[in-house]
Image 1 (cartoon, rainbow, N blue to C red):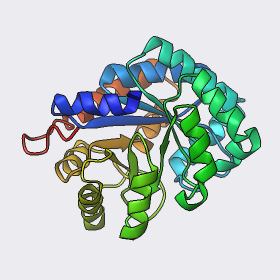
Image 2 (image 1 turned 90 degrees about the horizontal axis):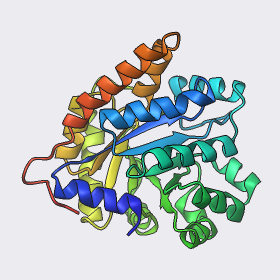
Image 3 (image 1 turned 30 degrees about the vertical axis):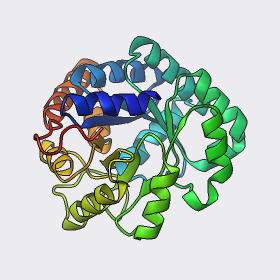
Image 4 (image 1 turned 60 degrees about the vertical axis):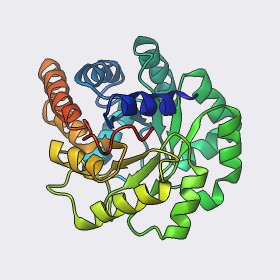
Length: 278
C-alpha cells in the first residue's frame, strides 16, 4: 500500500480527516523549509505539499505568487525541492510528501528523469495543475512505474463525465478546487463549493479519497468540507501569509504556524456518521 493511501486509511480508523499543508519550497530562503515543515508537522498536518517555485504559476493567487518569486530569487530550483523533500522525509518518515509543480518543468526534465528523481527523493505524489487528464496517459504510465501517485484536480465546473474520468485516473486522492479562481484565503465557503464536495463524494463512492483546497483557511472551513463528505482539507495560502507577515522574525513565524495548524487539525475530527470511509 502506498504512503498516501495508508495515511488516509489510518486517519479513517481514528475518525479523522486529513490535514494537508502547503508551502512553496525555499520561501523565503532554502534553509527555512525544513524548519517550517517541522512546525507544520508538530502542529498536526498529516501530509506535506511542497510547491516547486515557478515564474508563471497560473493556478496561484498573489500570496503564493510572491512566495514563488522569493524562492526563485533565493536560487531554488526543482532539484533543490527534491533534495529538501528527501531531508524532510528522513526526519518525518510518517508524513507523505507531495510535490506541486507545473508541467513545463516536468517536460523540460523529461518524464523518466523527473519521476526517477521523485522516487529517489521519497516523494509520494505529484500534483500538476496545468496537466489535463485527457493528455496524461504517458505521464500516468511513467508515474505508475515509479510508484508515485498522480493527483488530478477537479473544479466546480467539471461535468460529471469528466469527473468520473478524473476519479478513475487519479491515485492517492482527488484534489477538489473549491472555487472558480486562483488560490487564496476566503472568508466563507460558497454554496457551489459545498455542492461540489457533495457531488464528488457521491461519485467517488469511497473508491478514492477527496481533499478540498483553494480558499480553505479557517477551522470552520475544514470542519464543513469534512462534514459534507471530503476526506481531507488542503491549506496553503493562509500558511504562506503567516510566513510573509512574520518574515523578519523566524521564531515568531514558526510559533504562529504551529499554533494555527494545531487549531485546524482539531477541526478534522469526523462525526460518527462520516468516520471510517477508508
